[in-house]
Amino acid sequence: MKYEAVIGLEVHVQLRTKSKMFTRVAAGYGEPESTLVDPVVLALPGALPVMNKEALDKIIKAGLILGCEIAAVCKWDRKNYFYPDSPKNYQISQYDQPLCIGGAVEIELPGAARNVMGEHKQIPLTRIHLEEDVGKLNHGASDSLVDYNRAGTPLMEIVTDPALASADEAYALLTSLRIALVQGGISDCDMEKGQMRCDANISIRPVGETKLGTKVELKNLNSISFVRDGIAHEIRRQLAVKENGGTIVQETRDFDGQTGTSQSLRSKEMAHDYRYFPDPDLMPVNVDDAWKASIRATVPEHHFDRQRRFMADYQLPYTITSVLVPDRALADTFEATAKLGAAPQAAANWIANDLLRELARSDVGRGLSPTDGLATCKIQPAHIAGLVKLVESGVISNSIAKEVFVTMFQSGELPDVIVEKQGLKQSTDTGELAKWVTDAIAANPRAVAEFKTGNEKALNAIKGAVMKASAGKANPKLVDEITRKLIG
Image (cartoon, rainbow, N blue to C red; front, side, top):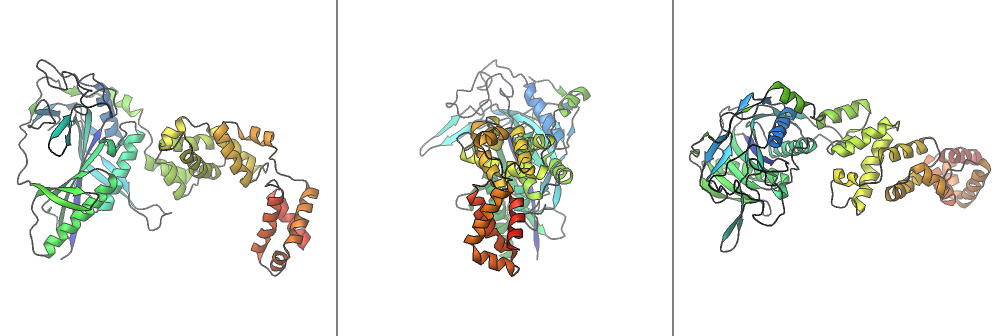
């Protein structure tokens, strides 16, 4: 019997806000343990919560980016449970009236070739709701300590429908979701810092069956790659159980990304009874059309829409757009350069190849994302546009342009200034060029003989010798013309 996988994800994303969800205490990462706290976070008697409007703005923005229906009214509920990471013994969340309903995440599946756009698919969402994060338990050999710095941080839970069919689709969803939320300024989505966390619900069923199989929840998936690996492992495990005549039991399993193995944490015979009830200290939230319109005006172009536009309007290849578009600052740099009159494909190549290479090499950009590196980079769109125009007009060769690029990255000088100061303009003096070509022909008789038999590539040896003799200043087009004339 053939089986198919059915997967749903629960993605928790910390919102990038200055303060926590229901108090003014700062939200952050990397501070000494339990220092980002106050009476509200620690649930001291008499401390009352006050809503953070910035967090509400950002979840509404996330909902608009993902095509959700924004509820006109939502309320706050208490999710009651006892655990050391929650000082109040309940979590303020949203139960039956979430802020964002429906929506979808657009994903791209791997193409037939790396340079071809893959199939796109919309993965429907069930809901997005806002809640407060809990503290973090740090387990030692003989004890467990709780750090409350994370407690109270605005946390968005994004729940997908059980609509994913493979580990690769789950990987594609998290990749696309992360790009959308980072570019929207909603979260940094750093899984290493716990800013984005994911649980996966996985089941298998006979192909053609519509009823869902018994689900297994997979936890501790602390990187996007581990989500993919964990889901693939769990699908294989469930298939093996079926093939051996066993029964899948509903349970929660822990996946170890280092070893590629999982183990059972607990059985889950029924849903927890969290005894939800409306929080008596918080009023419902009314979201009117004016509020939504003000947020909608800040929503950036979706990254896949931008990629399609770059390919259509600028005739950029898929491979280049796949480098530019995932980083908003990089794509903005390209578009600003093109608007200055630079040939789009040439500008895109300089940005996707040379600029990223220099950022990776430099102290400025080492270890940073392109967005962070560009914030302090001396190269601006005017630099790249100027360089493209110098090459296109024949003032400098492409090989000289690469040297100019490195210099202007380091100094911040405009390319025409560098070319003038260093005397890098291409030589168009036909007499001088003829002498270089004559010397190159004399030094490469074998290449001349091969060219005369019809081997066009043999001419490259002569051209290379000319470029070396001229220190890259010889005009390649004129060199070609003179070489053919002298040999012929």
